[in-house]
Structure formats: structure tokens, C-alpha cells
Length: 230
Image 1: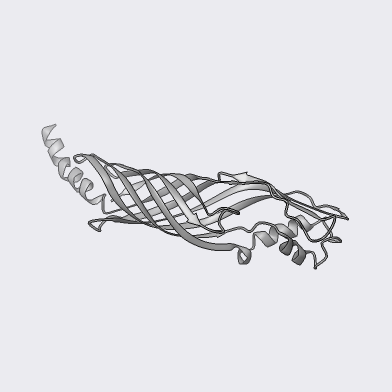
Image 2: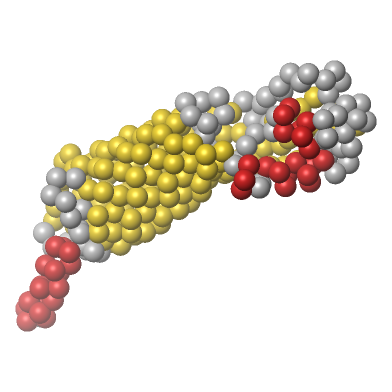
């Protein structure tokens, strides 16, 4: 038994040393925000538009990090998040079929982070508290508005044919050419835990960015990662 342990010891030592160089894996999370139901005042009498409320989108994505730099670690992660709501439109000719839609966003985060407190079990496990910040980019679906509907209704909201407007509106809002692009900054902090080559993170992130969440200057999120460290 002693010989067996000694034969595996170099492997454990190597793993404990090299799994800190880089890591990658999957990431899930939940954003924390709330968008209230909105009914913008339209310039045409008898025409109404209502965007339903939505909040707290779930996200899924992946991450990659490097900690070969002595003082700080570098990471990039991406995720896709969405939250469902209804869109309703009505004019003198009738009501558009309710459009069940999903606000969605594709996000990329570039982060520099630093260990605050670290503890370890030699050759087996390591844990550390970390904090960091960086730059982020976002690509999100638009929110229905008067200008959008006026264009789809040939500049005549009052007499617009509502029977198939929901399909036309959905095609417009899911067209990548009509997505909203934005960027901003973020701060984050949390816990990283490793057992041999299994790597996990639990952290909170505060995003500061306009035009991602309607009517808000940013949002928070709680995120969980599970992957491999080398």
C-alpha cells in the first residue's frame, strides 16, 4: 500500500501545480432585475400597445480563465439569458393575437480578478475568496414601440391589419439586424473551490451598462460554475 501511495504521489503533486494554470467549464446563473408592464402613449387615438412585465432571467454559458500571471487572473465568460413576457396591440380594426415573446441577451464579460484570501489542503484541494472587475458587451432583443409598429403597419397604425401582425412583429424583433448593442463595466466577488482537477465558482456580479435592461442602468446576477482546472 505504501508503494502504491508513493507511486501516485508525483501525479497528485503535478495535478495540484498545473491545474492552477488555466480552467474552463460551464456557467449557469440568474440575473436580478425587474421590468414593469408598460403601455406607452401613442400618437394615434384608439391605438394601444402593451409590453408585459418580466424579471430575473436565467442564464447559461461557459467560461475560460488563465492564472499564469503572478498578481492577477484573467478570465472571459459568455452567457445567454432570457425572460418571457406578452406583447399586445389593439387598433380600431381589432386586437392583435397576443405575442408570447422572450426578452433575450447574449453577454460577454472580460474580467481581471485577484485572490483576497486563500486556503489549501496540500495536493488535494484549494479554496479562495476573490474579487475583480472588467468590461462587458451585450446583444439584446428590442422592446416593441410606436416607431417599430408604424414601420410594420405602413405608417397607418389605426388601420393596420392585426390578424398577422404578431408574426410580422416577432420576425422583426428576432432579426439580428434589429438587436440592441451595448457595453459597460462590472464588479464581481465570490468563492473558488478546487478538488484536484475539478473546479467550481460561486460569485455575485454587478453590471453597470445602459440599454441592456429597459429603464435600468444595469443589473446584478448570481452565478455558479463547474469545470476543470489544469
